[in-house]
Image 1: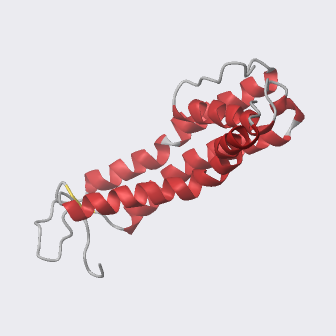
Image 2: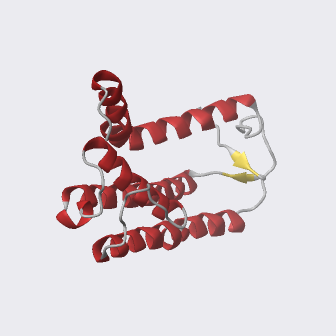
Length: 169
């Protein structure tokens, strides 16, 4: 891959573009996980739980991930209508919508000012099977490394407890 630069719509994807894209992804992940962790260890965050254990963690994680990703929703039974949860879910939603826009606009502005360059033999095509496999692999690896630890503490543990001992939360 040394010396091969991917192009999109005739414009080279450079290190700055990759860094800004990574920053945008990290903003969403950090907002979701940081607020969920804060709620899981604070008295105010656990005040709205109707279930204890791993199901409670799943309730908290779902509430913050849905707030960051869209308009926000919660598991049935999770009382998110407390002042502390309302404020932190609102901040998570603002970060997911507006702070996320800043690196995306920087990326769009950087791509807009670039000149079109013709493809060369050293160009890495973004329309072939190789690019698709690399893209899907990267998305899966980044997603797994980001969210698998908290999923292992919530839904996966709940599944093993449920199948092993028959206990439901």
